[in-house]
Length: 119
Figure 1: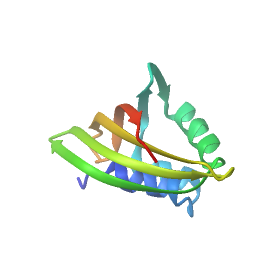
Figure 2 (figure 1 turned 180 degrees about the vertical axis):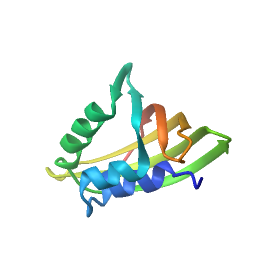
Figure 3 (figure 1 turned 90 degrees about the vertical axis):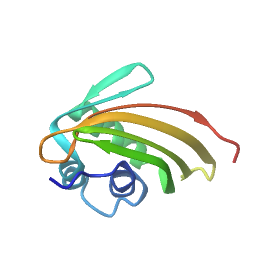
C-alpha cells in the first residue's frame, strides 16, 4: 500500500483539474469514501457533485502542507490553500484534516475544519 496525500488529491481534483474527475476521484478516494465538513457528511457521490461545483468556480489554486502524519490507516494533515475564483477574487484558508485510509491506500474518510486567513 502506497498511501495517498491530500495535497496531491487537491491538486489533481480541484486546483489543476487536467484529468477527468471520475479518474481523479478513483485514484484518491475509496468507493465507500465519506467526507465531513462544517457538520455535514457526504458520501462519495455527493462529494463528487460538490467537487464538480467547486471546479467550476476555481481558476487556480495552490496548497502548502504545514504538517502531515500517518500511523497505520490513520491520517492527519494541516495545510494552507490559496485560490483564485472565476470572478477574480481570492481566498486563503488553513485546513486541518483527520481521517483514515482504506486497505488499498486511498482515503476512506476525511473530516476537515478550517478558518480564513488574510489574503
